Structures are given as structure tokens and as C-alpha cells.
Picture 1: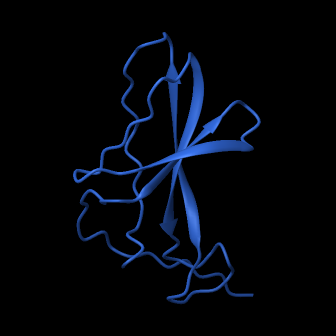
Picture 2: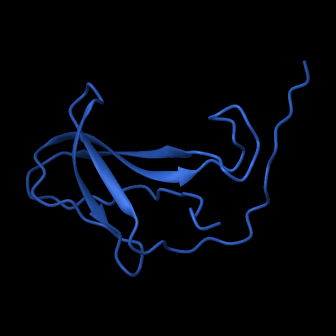
Length: 105
């Protein structure tokens, strides 16, 4: 068996506009309910969250095709995650950047 990893060189990064970002509530990682579109500058906001830990995710094109076991231009989308913690009600928390491969790529 031959195992091959394919990497692409990152040419540039830019904010994606009108992309869905989802939030997962709770520790079981199975309940997600809300999603918001990114703004003109790639930002997004979930309001009125209570104290606790949350996972955020957005879908990215899988440039390697590894998720489906193939290497082609019809690769599936994969979830890219970021974790945040709200330590007090009413606080503003900045999420780590979620880097996705533009699905128009």
C-alpha cells in the first residue's frame, strides 16, 4: 500500500462573507441549533449566551479528499472547530479564528 499526503500552499487568507457559522450547546457535542452568517468582514456574533463552554464550527472544503478516501476536486466539506468559554453572563468573548478553505476554491 502506498500512502500519499497532498498539501497545497496557502496563497492568502481573507475573510469569508455570508458563510454559516454554527454553535454546539452542551458537552455531548450533539446539539446544535443556531447558525449565523458572517458579516462583510468575516465576523459573526452569538448573543445572549449563558456561562459555559461552547464549540463553534464552519464547513470547509477538504482540499486533500482524505475525508472521503479520494483525492479529487469533488471533495466533501469537513467541519473546522473553535472552542470558547463564557465565564460570566453578559461578557464578550472573542473566538479563535476559524480558518476554512473557500468552498468556491
